[in-house]
Length: 265
Image (cartoon, rainbow, N blue to C red; front, side, top):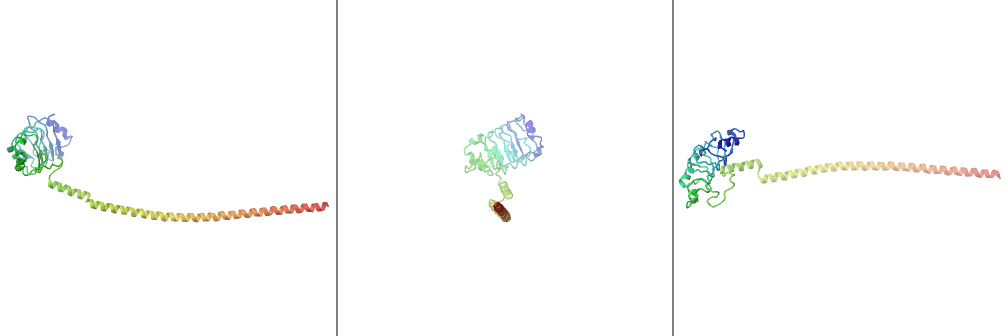
């Protein structure tokens, strides 16, 4: 796919002014130059054009916001002075796998004052004696060359920015948004204490309510028991009266029978 068509595809119905990242890897340049990329991409911060057969940066547009530029596996051999003019705020530049042979070609990058990381893997220049020492001496603004600093410490993830100001700003933002861990712990402890107090209050209120309900319930039971006892006493008295009446009836009957026997005699 040609670069111009690829750019239109990558836009996804967005205006060029809205795009911050653009990946054009593996598409074809026409005559080894950039087509379709212009000054309207004002907010572009990341541009990747790996393996696009790019031989010249002459038609690179002005991209003042651009911080990361991937140009690996192309056929660039010179003309790097264009970068300082068109992309003055670059912090990361990948030129690995290109046709860069000598230090004089790289010297043009001295004007990229914000450049922190430079990759020249698989370029002929890496075969020079004292290659790393020479590059670090020539480009004193860079921190990492081919992924390592002068003490052979590995660079952080390539997606991370090495801009110290940017890091400080990020840290301040994180502190503003999240707050220091100690404050977090104190807030959590206070919240837990508040919750415990709320539970205690709720429990005490519930306890009082339960106590009141329990007392009233017991009082009702006692009243009911007294009523039941009264009923029991009344029923017992009635039975006793009935038994007495029965006994009196039987006595009268026996007396009548005795009187009858006397009359017969």
